Length: 403
Ligand code: GCO
Ligand code: MN
Ligand code: MN
Image: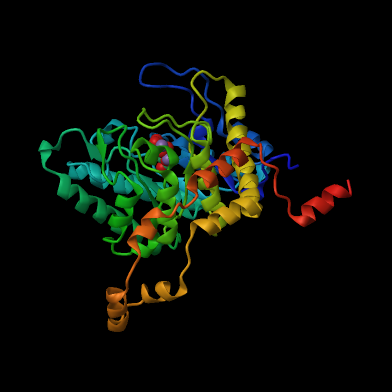
């Protein structure tokens, strides 16, 4: 039995802002003291993480002088070398400073929009110094509470202009970034622009260089919108646009909770891991969550360990799911195959259209058929609850037999 111990090969990443979260919320002050970035790195490495991500200001304070910046960068570089962690993704903080209170790229104030570009280019420079290849755009303040300002259409153009500009900047500098838009329906704004994965995918098609852009879906964000995270990432994978992923958990219809991965919706977490592990996705498995405000530093590391452990347990469940003969038979029984009709239904021709139009279907029989989904779903429930005999591959059984 695996120990479910994470290793760098699992590609787990955390943000400095996630394990560094001090437990502040809109109603209360921090409950934990900040942990030094170098200490964060050594603990993450000890726990088996692969990489670490940051917003520009997680590392370099917004008002740092050039020499302070250089000293911080140097210290961080040393900590990375000592721990062997990498920086696969970087991003910009375009939400904390009051200048961004009414948006960054979509602010009604042209000076704020220009400043957002400046800040993002500098943050892209910083990320590139550490070898980051994915650049995330989370438009936390890009939205409104009041639509009377009449900027709903302008906001789309401003957002588009900014992203087009930054894509050119990345190419001009030779950074080779892939950009990942991270949708969220609300919080901190009343309504955030591009609220779901589907809306971000639609918007990407309107950019000058859509091939440079994909999405960074977050479990909690789709769940806040009342949507299914596995459905969202499936659509992103299908479009070739899953550039990054933010794993966490969330109760539907609540404030942004950022719970430990798998803490709430285990079945959706399972199908999330299923999709990531079976679709050829080979990017980071990033945990964008934080320890509960109740926790001390020991709780922070229990949280981080728990995110990775749950992922690995679910990955093992995915293996069992795929090797479980009864589950696979139930899936096979669910699908009705018909080579002739499948051929007629794909790749239009006038003949196929005529053949389909004149075909007699037994509608009553189609409606009567039971697909066996209750049976199948219970098998998965039993699997997740650990009461199914795990299906073993023959090599695993042999290895065990020799112990
Ligand atoms: C949130 C977001 C952020 C972003 C981060 C990276 O709800 O606050 O998920 O954590 O992921 O800013 O861009
Ligand atoms: Mn979030
Ligand atoms: Mn996120």
